[in-house]
Length: 401
Image 1: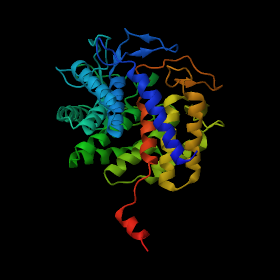
Image 2 (image 1 turned 60 degrees about the vertical axis):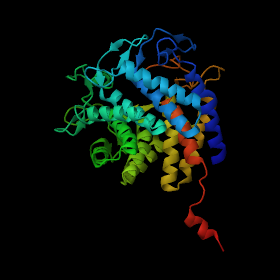
Image 3 (image 1 turned 120 degrees about the horizontal axis):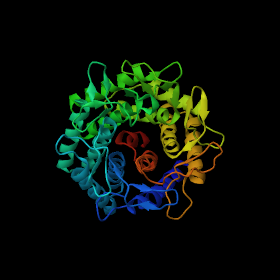
Image 4 (image 1 turned 45 degrees about the vertical axis):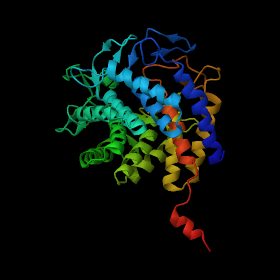
């Protein structure tokens, strides 16, 4: 598939399947979108609504409006912005709740830095798309929480979970069985959020935060001997378990690269190392990408978000290195998505996952963790990266006889 064909396919997938599916989940009575759609595409209208899902929706529709100018995307983003600010923001203690019930009343009032990061990411993109000054103010409030109470200067780590009034508690949401004190995942999405915030508020302080976090990725989270990221750690940065998350490694490859470019830095060994290791260890015969490896055993489950991030990560590695093998991998994973990950039902979106035998798993079509962010962003990245750019003035001059 040529670059132009891939760009057009991504544009069609985004605007004719992914975004319409999510527009159809709008809760016209209580605001936001319905919090759960099961494997049979039945909407649970009484499901809780998570902050992560809501903020990912806001980011996606804000970015789609900025790219395409479609007023239906703007309307969806505006509605979700109001829902988050009215229902998920804690007016008393600041930050976003983990979840509210289907009516918008607080459900789980714990605060997690991961969720705060997605609020910062979403508010920054919404401001970028609309120039709404209130959204920039909200982004700044969340930024100050993430980099204030959310950061431990003694350890140099971003903390994980708190109660409503910001008293630290065990990390039950992202720590898996070990209840990790430090997770790579939170640090990755704080980096992503700070990068987006830097685009709209490029102050020296934000630049410094990004630079310090890039150092953390290079010096503490990246293991150069195995070319992968450490996933779970205790309070002293000691690794817990033996887990290689292929999806996070390839996602980090391009997000770290994006953050570094934003502030004029470069981490080529980490960026390319993660991409090459994922290509060598995780790509399956059908072009899909395996989920993870635990104590050396590969879990060949094909999860929707891993496939999405692999396409972007491999394409970014191709752009970085010129290695056509990465471009081929990106195309092969896209082909797998179109044949096996896209829900064939007319009202569906993407399947949650296929198992090691490639049979579809009966998992939710939408939920707290299953949203339009990974696959929506994939399509936006392909449209942006593969759209031909007019030559610069210097290029035009060089072409003249």
